[in-house]
Image (cartoon, rainbow, N blue to C red; front, side, top):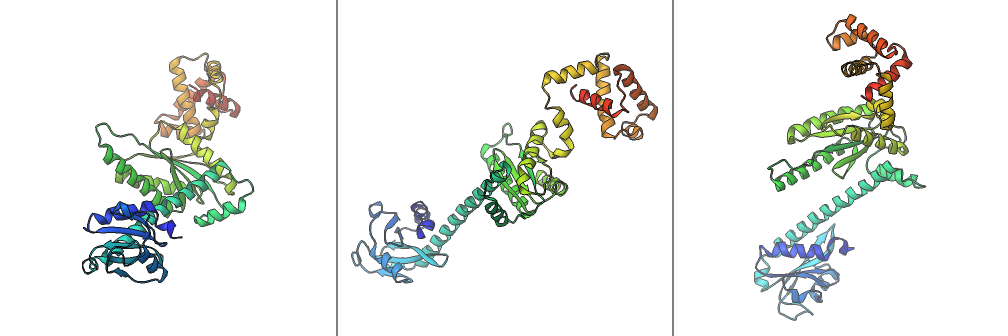
Length: 377
């Protein structure tokens, strides 16, 4: 098991770092007695009997008084390296024991600290990979017959298996400002990514970064997620001066529907590709989104048919008014207040549109045709 913690690569890194602060030859030996890293490359992969004995007998130290006292050993001091209360290797300092003994405990602690830091970095990478795999399975419907496994993984990452479930996508600009410092900008991006990930985690939102955007799943409803992300985006943009765009899919009762929620969030952020900041929800753009799935030739034919008797200025005027009419739920009073016009003016526009197109906005079927045409202008 020690190989999991004290690999040859880690051992080389430890020797390199410690050798910069001490002027003695150093050896890192695994718990089988093989030197896996050394400042003296001629000793690599050779047997070190003293280290083997130290591990076998769980000694606190083993001093070699003279060269050859133990097989493959030179005079110096050898100390155990502990990780999770187990000896995973030995650090050896070559030199007069009376001199090297003063450095022993310091070097031992430095070695254990570096080993622990490397382990934590690696563990974070494993955790992030596990999260990415889970999110990928959820948003692509990779369940097969492994429902129990998915539910177990959800619980491991502090998500309920009972719902609700919502997916979202967060995108931010990654372009380097003109004349900007590339290294400084990359460092800033790394900080921002870590900040977003950590802040989402505190809100019980599971996220992973992929292709310049975050993909996230959560037990929050769409409405709750809107509130959370509105505040989060404002805070991050204010602190780092970077624009964030978040799109949220619909909320579903079952995690097997997260595939739908993600598709909706992805479609929303794609539909508003020209935007660079704010919080968008699929439910607010669903009509426009569906209407825009029609082939361009059908869109153009509809516009030509509906507005065939209108001038270009009238088409522009009518289209804006038709959209406003839907936004205000057909309320003449609301339209008048919102656009600072008299109610009679609003009524006049409705009658004018009917006269020019033959379609009455107050009729639901006629209005739907008018709205479709207005969307395609």
